[in-house]
Image (cartoon, rainbow, N blue to C red; front, side, top):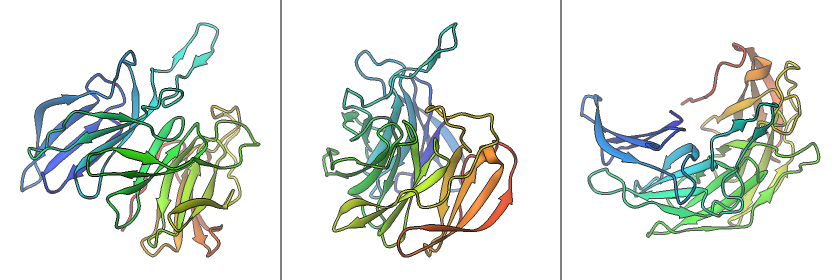
Length: 285
């Protein structure tokens, strides 16, 4: 299982699985929190792409649509000589974002296969207070895309804003955290072992600090897709006041806390040892 999305209005939980064809399963949630598995099964496969690998499912804040990012159009395969083949989604076929309408019953309607705006869409985050505008982090597009969804579930995308990739491609830009005032977006670069920041001005994305902090070195054994030794940052969390950002570096065995500055830069102010390559997610309140 990759991620969960909960519809409070429908008392329904959606579970996303990396491997299909039953990529999405649905649970009813009772008043006391008990789960009941429903019969519905949904796939994100389309056309000849019959073994797609999704990464994340997110409900629009108004509960009308379930959005799913597809990272690969086929399961990664390794040949006998050790060469791994990755078939990245949304490149060239612009269908790496799947939008399911949410029905009154909590079931899902016919999926809309749409352009995510960049190769290897990985992470969706709606702006605070908006059910229309969201950001999509692209792991192989090496940047962020600002997108908007209308009342019919149709998505329009702005031009992708990439980070600097002189160190090698892909950057594997993945997880996002948006500041409470929607001024800054912090993007975790799995392949580089660091974080980049964007600013949002008049509804447009631009680079703020790239990188926003120093790279955290890995242990010397794990390499990202781009061949670099990576500390494998896997998730981040921004405090509700927007003053502190926390980042997991699983292949360096550390959780780092940063102070957030007005220019979008980050300064390390705390560090804790964590189990090697174990924690994969952060949440707080």
